[in-house]
Length: 102
Image (cartoon, rainbow, N blue to C red):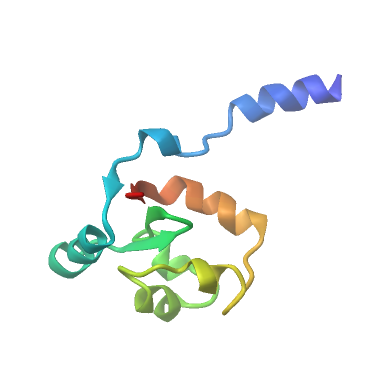
């Protein structure tokens, strides 16, 4: 019974825009959007994230995220600076605005 209830609750969770529905960007386009249009975008695992609403809430301080705007944060996110937990990964699903072109 509990599993049934949990499965119903899982259906209600908003995991952000489906990756397959995201627009594609080149690295150059991401850099240009940050530099020329003031976007607060970073790249994590080939996904473009809009971190604008999260910058000031980041537990490690805003300076870390600001230093990575327009850049790939994957290595830093996965342990070079701090190995983020699943909760942090789950937060990023709501920040997805695009994916890097293959």
